[in-house]
Length: 251
Ligand code: MF3
Ligand code: CO
Image 1: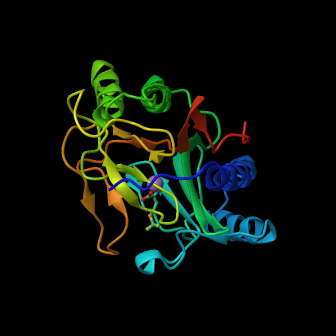
Image 2: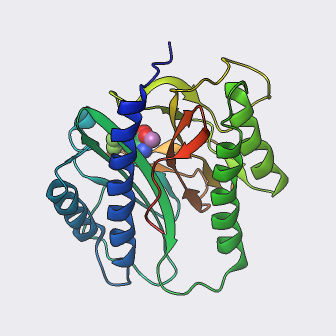
């Protein structure tokens, strides 16, 4: 069952999304070589709490931090650490918050320093564009898998590979609600999209085709052969007026 949100719930989620986007923008501006991801994590927690919200991930199934900070071949769920960022790293930051009973969730991938590597720029561009291709499919009457297909077919056409082991999701009073939103699949399947649905759409894309694996810390997801990975995510609501990207305000 996909829980529908009322306009007033969506209004709260929009404010949550705005706070989250501003927070993530600030964190991204702090990304420089020589900095640790744990310092970014502490700043994120401070900013979220100052805004009257709570970190969504901290304590979620025992997750120990406010952000996920995934570097290079780390795909998602990288745990912030004292490891220092170096020029040429790519850093995916995933962040969520909870306020007034409702969640917001988003992610982006940034470069550390200047990177003169076409493969890296291609990976980031394609992953972000695939998110927007998915978001464009969020219209009344479309089917859920139209989102999945738009993302997966675009990524494939660009010679890259979506992660199949992790998916986007409904979001609202829970961080993860129905439905699951894979980043691949045939179009025209699954429920029809209706006003009041809110989704976290989150393509994870990598340069190698093999399935990911999880490190011994039981969290960090890495590519099988050391290929790079990127991750972009927005929380979006479908309203009578069409799709509304709630996690904007960060640009
Ligand atoms: N954006 C991720 C998700 O939607 C982050 C959650 S991971 C955890 O699933 F850290 F919270 F566990
Ligand atoms: Co998510």
